Length: 378
Image (cartoon, rainbow, N blue to C red; front, side, top):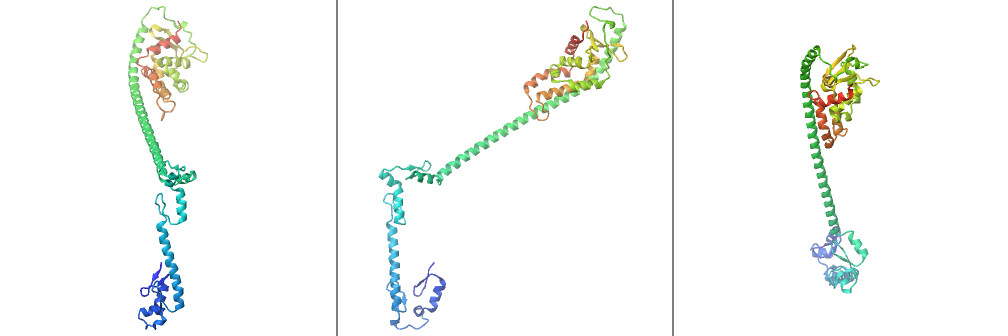
């Protein structure tokens, strides 16, 4: 930034040069009245900028430079004022820039009928395909449109993710609700089971007394009964051997037995508990019409089991109902007890058979009918 002397208007490039001038230049010191004015013949004044010089030779050199500077400034000002595009009236800083602009000016191209390349985003016309390609890389409207599309895609993705999350939450709620219902159902069944056990014990005692009285009375043998001598029971059946039946329930009871309800339990007992290793029956039905079953106890005596009450109590005490419930639940939950989805089709198939198994102590007609058909010796 240039500095000018406030006394003689001499221009300097630096402040230090200006200060040096103020303190040492005689003609400036004269103007400042710090020294006496020399004779007029020793001072020479520039006719262009009124600068005072100490000699005629210096004045000539200064005026020559001063004329060039003034002419250059006027030329620049004049040139800038006339460098304007005749088609779009755009002002350019040099003739070279004006010439390049005229070749690319969209109005000039239209006037001359040349092909133009139009930007599809901002509708700007370009003179060549390469210029259009260069323009596209910096076109703000193109970038804005791309950003808008990206924003829309992102919003759609977030919306889909939210919908998926809501769907998962609803599904989890349904699973939790079903699991809660199943747990409540299991608790109810367990409570009912305990109550039924107590009732059955009382009823069994009463029934045993009635049966014993009936046995003591003389009866006429009918055609559908079988004498003890014709039973041909080889081995004994121990209703106190819970280890054997618990092992069978744990390892051999399967979903095929459970899905068949009481019929499946009858088949399970005949296959695993009521026959010996050679396939001989240890428990036989001697009177299907009255559901009269007989077996040989550990003392070798033939005992009766009216209505299969002892056998049913033996099964229940060994835990067959609880195991049946576990097998059924694992089946309709696809093998995952904690987090598996409930297969409602399987659940619907299993509800009725499972209910019959849970109520076998109160109503066991299907079990006794199937048991009689598989163990009858008539």
